[in-house]
Amino acid sequence: MVEKTLYIVRHGQTEFNKLGIIQGRGVNTDLNDEGRKQAGLFFEAYKNVPFDKAYISALKRTQQSIQPFIDGGLPFEKLPGLDELAWGIHEGQLPTTENKAAFLQIMRDWLDGNLDSKFEGGESPNEVEVRQREALEVIMSHPEEKTVLICMHGRAMRLLLCILTGKPLTEMDTFPHQNLVLYKVVYDGEKFEIVDFNNAEHLK
Image (cartoon, rainbow, N blue to C red; front, side):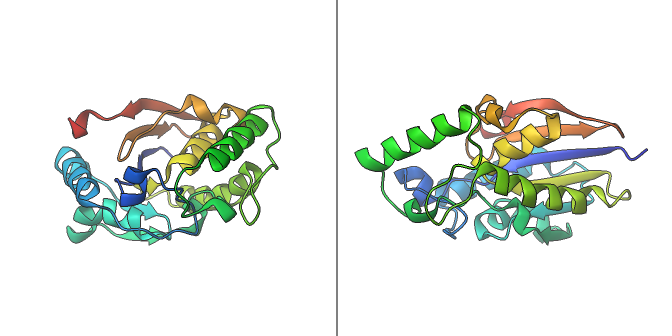
C-alpha cells in the first residue's frame, strides 16, 4: 500500500491573468511582480514541509512559482501532461464580446457532458484527461516519494481534481481556484481524498 500526499497548486499570477488575456498550453508567459510575491508567500508558508519531489508542467510559469523550493535543492520533473488545456485560436486574445460568448458556450457544452467539444486548434477535456492520467501514473509510480509538490494550471487542475476524486469531468467547476491556491490531497493506498480545499491562507 503506497501512501502519498500531494500538494497541488496553481501557478502564480502572470500579466495575462491580470489583464484577462486567454492563456493556455500554447502561451508561455512569465510571472509578474504579484505572481513572484505569491510564490514567495507560498514558500514561506510551506518551506518546512518535507517535500521529496516537485512535478511541474512544461510551461515556465509553473517552475517560477516554486523556484524557491528548487533553489533550496528540491528535485523536480517537468511533465507536459500537467500543461494547461489548449484554448487553440483563442490563446493570447484579450476578452471580447465574441470570445466571451464562445467560452460560455463551450463551458455549457462541457457541463452538458459534451467533453469532446473544443476550440479550433485546442484540446477537449477528454484529451486533457488522457495526458493527465499518464502524468499521474509517473507521479504515483514512485513509492519512495511520500510528499509531492505539483504546480500546474487552473482549468487543468480542475480536471485533475475530478480524476483524483472520481467525479465526472462535467463537475470541474466545483473546484474553485485563484493564483497560487492550494489543494492538498491524500492517497491512502486505495483512494484520493481532498483534505485541504482551495486554501489561500498563505496569501493573506
